[in-house]
Image (cartoon, rainbow, N blue to C red):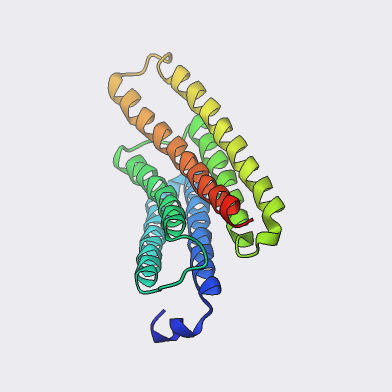
Length: 210
């Protein structure tokens, strides 16, 4: 943000930065869906996901750097860092799955991966919507609706993971295949957990300020 950051109202400054980070996370999740839908171009699609993850890391660095030199913040520092960290984790897990799929030479995403990925996409969209309203606590009712939606989506991912695991261990595949797929399923579901972590932070913020 540079020297000019000191002329930007602190509320706008931090909420703008976090909203941009959230939008980048959603872009990363959308890029992952695009990779799954166009898996024959997975190497190119993976590079785009890596670029977005790198962009997200820089955003985290910029927010923390700004936080360290700002005396007064619009919400508690621990809430800012918790929210930023949860958002960063979502994209980290997405990138990890995308990289592993290429490294493990997964021939094609299966139905369980597609289901988990699209559930994650729904969660990331709800997180982004909640964060876009966060600067105005008059929108608390609508923000809480998005939080409820995220909790429902995370439960949906839990059910999908259990189904995926049950079929994985029942399909007679070799142990190496099971280990690879289990990791991919787990990481996709964990990314959705991180959406819920972000929602929990947002909920805590509402309790403190509304």
